[in-house]
Structure formats: C-alpha cells, structure tokens
Length: 331
Image (cartoon, rainbow, N blue to C red; front, side):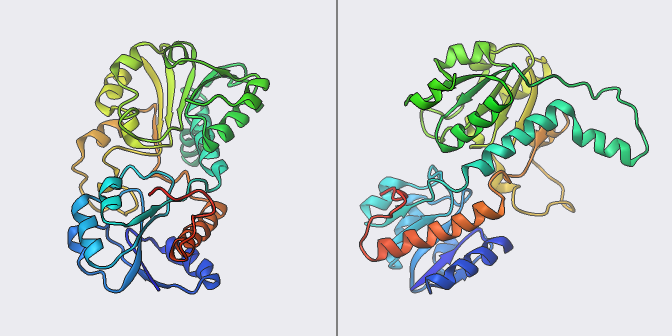
C-alpha cells in the first residue's frame, strides 16, 4: 500500500521512513505542493499525505478520487486547507494529527515573547560585533503581567500552564471552560474583556469562518496601548494590513508571528538568493519590534516523531475500516 507525500522536506523523509519500519507502507515523496497538475502524477496510491500549505480544493479531490485515492492524511492539526464537503462527496476519508507535542508550539510562543521582550536576538548580534552597550535593550518583567489566551485546546492549555509559572494573570477565551484551569486561577472571559485587559495576547485557535481575521482594526482598537501579539496558530487569524497600521501607530508594541497568511509562497524554502516580491512581509520585517519565524513552532524531535507515528497509524486504522484511535478522523 502506497502513500504519496507532498510538500515534503528532508526531515519528513527521515522521521516517516524511521516510523514506517513498524508499518511497512510504500512511501513516495514529492517536494512540491499538491495541486491539480501534481495530482495527475499519482499512481496506485492508497493515500496522499499533505501539510499546511497544500491546497486540497474540490478540483484536486476530484482528480484524487479518479486515481483511486481513499485517504487524505494531514500531518498537522489544522484542516482548513481541505474542501471537506468535496472529500465527503467522493468518499475520501480525511484524517489529521489533532495533538502532537502541544508543548512544542507552546514553548515556541514563550520563546517569541521572551525574545521580543528582552531583545536577546539583538543582544546576540551586538556582542558578536563587540558592542556591549545596553541602550535599546530595555524589557519588562513578565511576572504579574496579564496574558490573554485565545483558544484553550491542548496547545493553549500548555501555554497557559507555563505562563501561570511566570506568575501571570490569565484571561482565557474558548467555547469550553476547563474547570481544572479555573481552579488554578484562570479567568474565562469574553474577547472584548480579554482584549481590554491583556498585556500579552497569544493565539492558539483553529482557522475557520468564525476566526478568520479575528485580530483586525476593531479588535486592536480595544487593546491596551503597546500590547504584545503572538501568533503560532494560522496566519489568517490576523488581518496583516490592520496590524501593520497598528504597529506604525505604536498601538501594537510587539508582534511575534510563526505563521503568515501568504506563507505558502515563502516558508519551508531557501530564498536567500531570491528577490522577495511580497511587499507585506517585507514591510513587517522592517519593524524593529516584529519577530518572524518560518512556521517552526512544531519543529522538535518529539513532535516530528509523534506526527509521523500518528499519521501512519491513522492510515493503517482507516484501511482496516477502523476509526482513527487518536481522534484524528475529520470525515
């Protein structure tokens, strides 16, 4: 049984090949993203394995169905890039990895907060140039600051517990209240209250019709002056043009993003010798108080191991007409 991978990187091959020793699938890898053109090259594949920037449209799904593909396996948690209705119509099962080391993403969000605050990236470069001045490196105590967390799934909860360890006041927004976190002092509240009272706001919610452009000019206008925004979830949760305007007006004091709305044209590739035509990300990179990483929050040994194991287990379960044991079945 063959699984065809798209948007594959060197590390995907290493971790999936290692975990596949337990499963015995035939694995085929393509570096390019899945689209209508590449879908036509698929032969004799039971499943396709895709990542966050593959666009699995109804047209792509129609081709996959004609090729006999039975499973679309996402090696990530989000599935906003798949036309679920089209997959259902064609009888193709869609599965994902709902939880892979939530601590990996939570810890990266913390790293972005600490870096933006204490400017360690700038201090590192200064010292290498024998500049030991502290001018311009002033930060603030995170202890006792108010932190707003939007989305309290497994990643949001992991992030929350770390921030509680810093001694922060936590405001949380989610459709479900976790009573154990309430007992730890977390206050579940409305988005409006969270915006108005948080010094730091971190996004850990999925991207869907309700959350697209959740952070726009209206939301930002309710926030504290100088607020820190962190996004390690999905790029389109933030309306980029609105946050750029807020940065220019110093309404947003710090911005840390590991995701970007147009990242499929940039991330996961070396463009160091290319001219980047995306003026928006160039504008973002021009701000001294903006930190951008290239969708690396998930990138730990533990997470990659769990992603590979869970994805292959999902495919095995579905081929045996079993539900994916980890709750990863979408349709």
